Amino acid sequence: MASQPPEEPAEFQVSDELECKICYNRYNLKQRKPKVLECCHRVCAKCLYKIIDFGDSPQGVIVCPFCRFETCLPDDEVSSLPDDNNILVNLTCGSKGKKCLPENPTELLLTPKRLASLVSPSHTSSNCLVITIMEVQRESSPSLSSTPVVEFYRPASFDSVTTVSHNWTVWNCTSLLFQTSIRVLVWLLGLLYFSSLPLGIYLLVSKKVTLGVVFVSLVPSSLVILMVYGFCQCVCHEFLDCMALPS
Image 1 (spheres, helix red, strand yellow):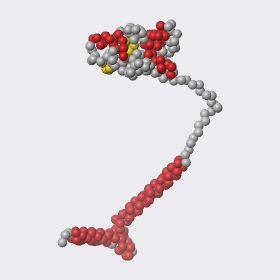
Image 2 (cartoon, rainbow, N blue to C red; image 1 turned 45 degrees about the horizontal axis):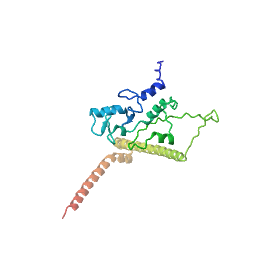
Image 3 (cartoon, one colour; image 1 turned 90 degrees about the vertical axis):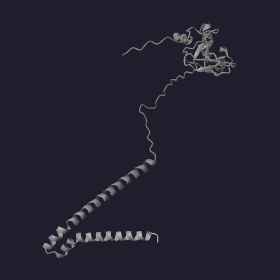
Image 4 (cartoon, rainbow, N blue to C red; image 1 turned 180 degrees about the vertical axis):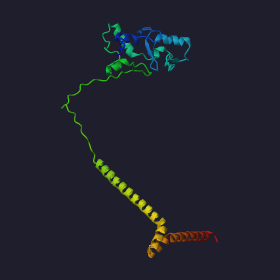
């Protein structure tokens, strides 16, 4: 198993948060106050003054050195930018012997008094407040029995669905049986029709004249009927076409 890398101590993480990411100097309550830009990046006031002096940013605007996001200066002064109140609280507590430093620096207890102390009423610009939401572990209540109880809910609509599906299956079987019967009957009639001529000759030879004449004349009579039907259909079409022509 791969060994996990050792976690950094809390004091090192706190000190890293209290350093400016440009000059790597520790924030203080005088010239290096932590200023929050509109992109939520923190830069010390001294570095912001240097950025303005270098002329890299337009007049009245500071370009973030990390993400190049432009932040407007309310009064063209770096001091008008909001301070990072969380870091100021840590700096204040550190100067008093670290008595008010929390055990976990990523957690912040939010109360009305604490919020009133963190937000400065003199700042007109929006402040950026980062909150870490921690999941509270709750004790699971003891179960009434060791065997889990599972309840199944069967709505009344399931019965109707089952009935409909059963009726649909019966209807499909009936329809399939009917179609199969029709196909078998058509094949039998076709076989009887095409075998009627040799069967009629056989009956005539066997001296069964009536049945023989019927079977022998079945094919010619059916052909004559088809020819008469086709002739009548053509005559009807021609008559209807003549009636449809304008006089």
